[in-house]
Length: 480
Image 1 (spheres, one colour):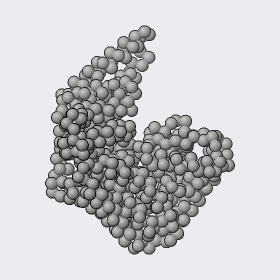
Image 2 (spheres, one colour):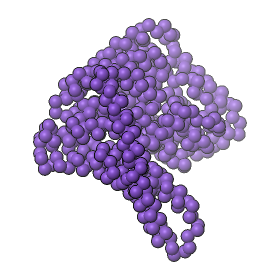
Image 3 (cartoon, one colour):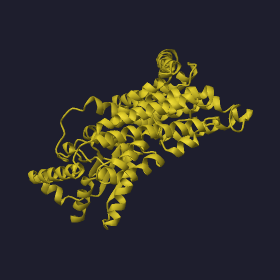
Image 4 (cartoon, helix red, strand yellow):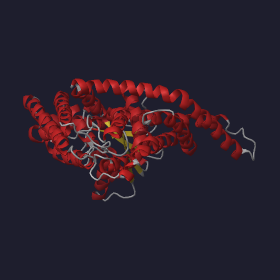
């Protein structure tokens, strides 16, 4: 199933400049890393809304008063603090919070997009200042310079946010909201699947969800208690339909691995599991688009929505975040999306005249290329055979989905083969530690991984469940 074209040198220096897609992936990963640590707070707000607002399950006028302040102050401040810390450490977190309060007070809408801008900006400002004055502060004056620099720069950023940055972001936000609301009003919202589904399999799903739909969804949920925007790109139905089609009509390795992928995708919420199947048979993207559009149409028909962003996109998260009155619409939208994708994908797979040995051939080509590459490396290969391998990092876009699953699976393989003394953990690509001996990523993320870690050995895989490159790595570790 893996693409042999990607089974090239794993340790050779990568000098090619990153593609536009890799840059967008990195941007999406940055957004995700800002949102993901705060997902619990978003879910808490969603549950508060689902339960206690006048249309909720248990209307409570007193508890409902928390809903407004939480979405206006708490959630944007958490995003800004996290974004500032990612760029400028603790001082960056403080700068992000100071800047965000200017946005929040100076605008009429929940400032999620603004917080995701001002937080990293504040971190960058203080980081640049600290670097500028590094080794220039007289001994004994460090604390006063650090405190007053943070206070003065934060004050300026807060004023700038209140008068300029906030209104600009509010204007842009209103433009995007108006455009999507126009699609809703004309019944053309399902057309978003033409963008969503191809972008997802190119690992741009986090850019779409965290950058666009989640902020818009939170604004809508604050007004109505739910939003369809949380469902337009996260529906687990199309992925379920695709994997079911491969289970019944796929060839060899695809048919064998699809059932396991169904469990992890649909119940675990890790959608990256189905991406390689689409990349292997690009025509199946038609089924994904048809299924995604059908699901959105059903959600719209039933006026269904969720109270918060389902992260991960598991059916359990969907049901847990479904408000009163939306269960039929949400379940119907997921099922219809799965059925439509299954039918379209099944036709595509049945009409496929490819060899029954396609998967085995791809794996053999990949393995032979890897062996040839090892034979060509003289000193590098010898050094690789003698070096110790103490840490293996699995990395993905957000560091919490496919990489977590891959690390867990690989640890079990190490235990099964009685290989000890090797630390295996999962990270966002850019956060993989420098002391990693090997970094494992999906083949479509290798450009971004090599950009972030140009001097590390990168192993690329096409299948998180059973990839020849991982089998080779196990054999390599057994020899050591």
